[in-house]
Each structure stands twice: as C-alpha cells, then as structure tokens.
Length: 168
Image 1 (cartoon, one colour):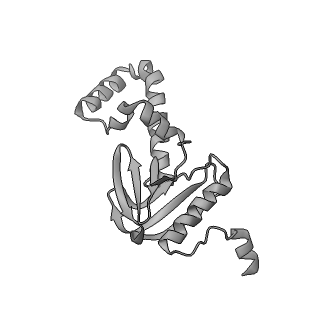
Image 2 (tube, rainbow, N blue to C red):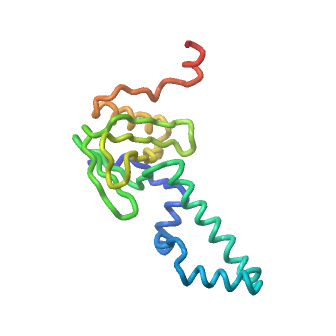
Image 3 (spheres, rainbow, N blue to C red):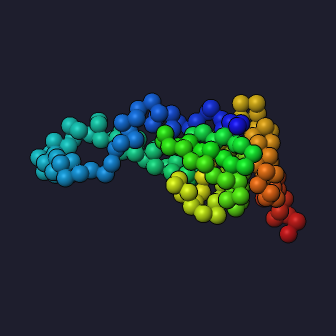
C-alpha cells in the first residue's frame, strides 16, 4: 500500500487530533440551555463572554471544513484495487470500481482532491483528501493522475477553466 495523503493536515484536523474533547462537543443539552437562560436573564453572560467567543469561533472553524470539503479524510492509502481512508479514527476500504469521478483542485492552498462515489460510504457520497505535497504540487498531480489511471477514468484535472472558456 502507498500513502497518498500529505502530512500537512488542515488546521481543524490538527486541533481535533490534539484536543480530542473538541470531537465530542455536541449540541447543548437541557442543562446547557437552562444555564444559558440563567446567564442571560441575570446579565452574567457578560462575564462568560471571554469563554463564549472562542467556543463559537472553534465551532465555526470545525464546521467550515465539513462544508467546503465534504468527507475530508486525514489519511488515504492506495492499493491495486482499493483505497483505505481514515477519518476520526475510523477506517473504510473503497474499491476503485466504486469511484465515479475525481476532481483535483490544484490551485487551492493546500490542493485537494474530491472523489465522487457511485454508492455512499460511511463517510458519505464524497471523499476529499490533501494529496502528498511534500515534494511539490507536481507530485500531487502525479498521484491524482495515477488514481485516474487505476480507476479507468479520464483525467480532466489538467484542463484550465480559463482556456475552456476562451475556446468555447
């Protein structure tokens, strides 16, 4: 098996790996709601403001990656006929025959690949990962091209959108 993801994880995943309790934060329960009502009704919420603002910012930071990169995997390993994806401690195997399309965003920082599956996996219908960029962005493009070749999908990642609009 060959690891195809970068060790340069986006910041939210580093936060979640460093502070696993952030992973367990759920929507407020009844006790949190009662506490919030007491703080607001008595005016003591101003004292809790230095704690509330960072918690809101952390929750926005955590959820923004889920919005822009659905199914972001921290590690992806490629074998001859399957991908092993790891996310939040869970691992799944995705057969290469199940991959419908692969989109590579090489102009983003960091560049990322999004895989659309024919059937939804436990991580959802799309998987995203940051290819290995330790040896440069060109190597990341080679990894995605190899994945295209193994899946039997035509590579559309090299097409420049500006060039497409000029020629059409």
